[in-house]
Length: 404
Image (cartoon, rainbow, N blue to C red; front, top):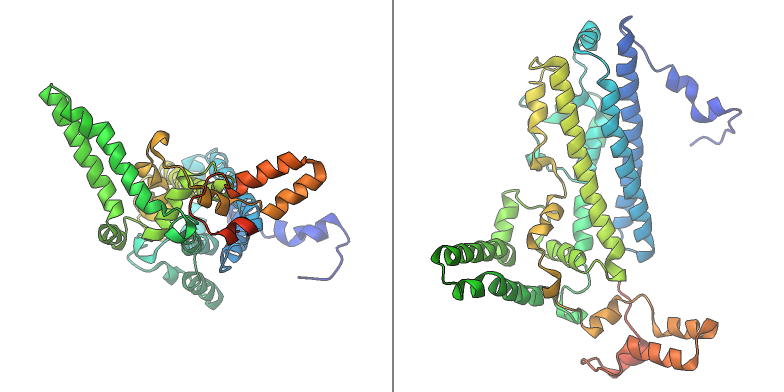
């Protein structure tokens, strides 16, 4: 960072170096557009990395400061908006015809978008697994980079905790996943799922006279049982994870499911937004890859890529779920049950999730509340009219403040 005070707009933005960096290899008009478009991509990749790094820094804390969750939401949303811009930016590049591109394509020599260091860093920092990658010319992607600085950056991005790893640790600490929180969500959820399956499939089958309809109900019942069994059985879940079918630990998936089901609780509102934005980022990257594949097919057909790859065939292979970092969040909907079956939270759990303490209520009374309002508010907070097993000390001090 320079302490030199810029003397002008151009100096502040470093426009001389930025604008002079465009160097064409031919006199073909559309090469200018091609270079500008890709330079713009790299500038936005730089901003995306800046935002993702800042979010990772916040998540690295042993306990996430809840005052920072809005910051995470804002910065992830910024990444989402940038990616939307990058998806649309391909439309501008498509104003160039295949014949126009062919006129200067030889000037690219072996230069290829696969050599984008920043995009590889972005993939690693998000959490793309090494064994999920499609081989580029049957070799590790690091081999296309020759300079020590780039290689060091890539290795550091591989060795440091990815956003996926940090989010996983955060989800594993979700309040309500154990008995100490006064809720034990997982045991309760398994009970209500069985009740929902019985009501939806088993009981209708038992009372149905038509054999075809009865068999259909029973088939749906067994299929639903099998689907949820892969989630409830930890060994089956871990086996799927080893095969790359799941990303999150079993406990982290429980946390994500709890947040999704109880997203209307004030304490879970912003965590739910975070999960939604992570899915948005994955979706937009997939859209960008897909649009890029279509553009490449349109421009070069089945020709070999400039970097020596299979071109279209290689790029098409990157659109699969293997590159979707937060795949588990998309699959949460498989295990969502009707709202009527979602178990209500205990009073104790509600208090532990509350961001207001008894002290907060007293301050509210001093500002604008009456004495009766205060008493009713405290009773509601402490559930003095409905004892569910808490000790007297907890009732005196107010709800415990949890950090997730």
